[in-house]
Amino acid sequence: MKILSIETSCDESALTILECSGTLEAPTFNILADSVASQIKIHAEYGGVFPQLAKREHGKALVPLLLETLTKASMCVGIDTPYTFDIHMLDREPELQSAFKELSYIQKPDIDCIAITTGPGLEPALWVGISFAKVLSIMWDIPVIPINHMEGHVVSGILPTELTNGVLSVKPVSFPAIALLISGGHTELIHIKAPLSYIKIGQTRDDAVGEAFDKVARTLGIPYPGGPAISKLAQNARDEGLTLEESFTRPMLHTNDYDFSFSGLKTKVLYFVRDLAELTDQYKKKIAREFEDAVTEVLVKKTMKALSDTGSHTLLVGGGVAANTHIKKILVSKCQEQDITVYFPRPDTATDNALMIGMSAYMRIIGGAVYVDPLTLTANGNWSITEV
Ligand code: KG4
Ligand code: ZN
Image (cartoon, rainbow, N blue to C red; front, side, top):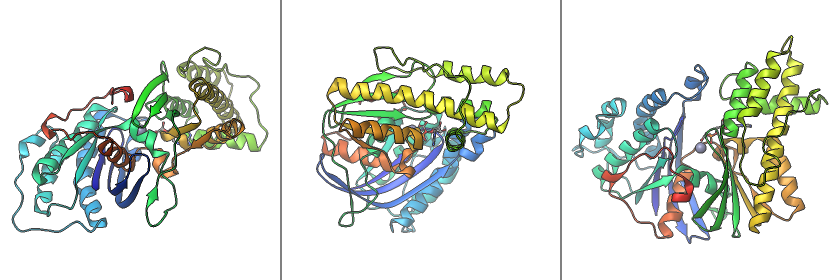
């Protein structure tokens, strides 16, 4: 089965065409085409993602991206008599509306299903992708399935880097398992009792961990998204043996739950910097290290507790912060000590992408999910993974 997946929940417009086969326990994927347009540079000027700006950029990006994706998959064939479509369905997406006509002159591609992220995320951004999926689904008469973005991050970890017999066969997961989702918008611990069955057992009570990285970066004068830069500075400090003279409190380290809080830590950094006579490069490195150490310690402790309390032997890590090498190193070594299999996404699938949405869609479809009427698709900015 061939799936076209569409992801617009935040600041990446991403499309993938996947050829999928196999069972729910052992699916295989062949990536026919994968395209992404990142808005990071545009948002960097403003220090964060602006929903209305994201919406406009998705609207501009989606049609050219789909043409590029279809071309890569050898599915872009022009026709003389255009398909008819309801232009008014795009009244709320002016950028998409003006570009869409071009697609009506493309032959219906050999695609069995359209998978669309409908939440969680920024609603104005989600809506652009949803309107796009809706019109494509009706125009080409291709069924559509709504996908939860966080479920996408969960499955992103089981995709291998290497092909086996020309396809990507997922890594084996034993259940129950735990997923640690760490991104710019979320910090969650998920108990996965069986395939496609999720219980959120812990989450942040305020800022997400990626958000804290980005805000600390801003305090240190580093542009958005500052996570990777903070991580580099912290590594420099470790390499040079630099430590901060003060230890930041590890938030909620000793609470008997799986929840997190990063807002206090971010504020601590702000006050620390405010009280400094001068924010030197040395201080930037030392602060980044102390901050990253504090974050890592809490994430690792709560994750190991969740694994042991639920009797889980597999850990899936997903979300942009899963690209953090220090967090990865410490988690991997703790998991090794306790005979736990841990999977991280490939670097290109840690951050938002459409590949994970297509994978999740295929697993849902073979797990018995039914297609929905495209007209009923709606954005749900707070859609919890527990409700999928
Ligand atoms: O999953 P993602 O692409 O988007 C959301 O759904 O939020 O995650 C983006 C977040 C940003 O906050 C970014 O700073 C953070 O992931 N990030 C990192 C690293 N790479 C990306 N944070 C820490 N260390 C990194 N290496
Ligand atoms: Zn994400």
